[in-house]
Amino acid sequence: LSVGMFPHMFMHCLTAKSARTFRWPLICYPLCIALVWIPSVVLGMLGSVDFPGLRGPAANSILIRMIDLYAPGVLAGLLAAGVFAAIMSSLDSQVLSLGTMFTQDIVRHYRFKDNMSERQQVRSGRLFVFSILALTYVLSLVVDRSIFKMAIWSFTGFAALFPVVVAALFWKRSTTFGVVASVVSVVVMWIYFFLVSRQFPDYTVLGTGVMPVAAMFLVSSATLVIGSLLTRPPEAARIERFFKPDRT
Image (tube, rainbow, N blue to C red; front, top):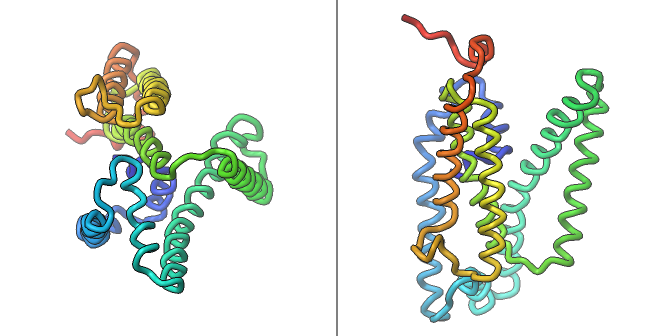
């Protein structure tokens, strides 16, 4: 569910000329996932033979341990280059989408409206991208945080916001209050679970084995539905802007 919430994935989808463009990617997606993840799982299983007993975060280092044990220097360099290439292929889309969101949804919306030239918009996006990358680099120097842990908590927040997108696209009765309440519930629960997990790395909800993302998803969905039903529905004019009129 988290992948469906990534802003850069949204923007990639918006480049398609029609919905038919997604037919073959959706058909091939499960096959591609199998091709990518089955070797990864098998590698982890084989690595447990050479490095038994790894638990928790230590298990995430299995690939590095295998490379250090078996790969010569040149092969290790090629593998590292491949890892960096994979990171960059996503990083550029992510930071560019952030720059676009900052320029279009904040700078233009709250300050300049439609008075910004194309050059000014590009400059605004570039400055924001540079700021984000510089801040990330500085934090990487002072914060000792596992990239795997960061990814898990980032994906947790994205997945918990998935009901908001579903409601916006398919539920005409959803309201601004319901959406805002849902987002606030995700933020509050995310902060709580994140802080608790720092004290108890293997924390699950009430010790039941349920991951925090499951509870956040349920609360987000319930808050969205209840908040929308308790407030006035959107005006017909607004709904018609985004939904085709029903045919009888």
